[in-house]
Length: 160
Image (cartoon, rainbow, N blue to C red; front, side):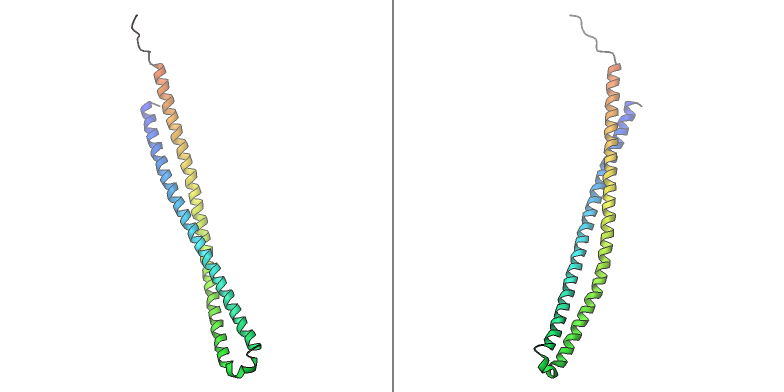
């Protein structure tokens, strides 16, 4: 292969390496974004679970208060207690349905994060391969130039 062809090969390999580097950075940003979205989805699920625990605790507290301190005045507070119980039950049911949807979104976020990470890792490998290709092309061109210089006649020296 001639030095000119090797120089063209080096230029092409260098351009490929730059493109692969750009692709790797883009894949890394996408992976980081997917990871942030995953963390946000995890936080939403944790918050919803905390809300459900709070609603369950309020419901239990209401039931205990009807058995304990308000038992003697049950006739007076029965309507309020029933309405409060229904409201808590409704809030709890809505929160549980929301949790189901949010857990499904969490599963989707995990899948997207894993896919983005895999794409980034693949881009890293491709970038490394293109860097190796460029380095090999550079080394081949250097060797070809050195060989060409060795083949040329040495410059004539003037007599002293």
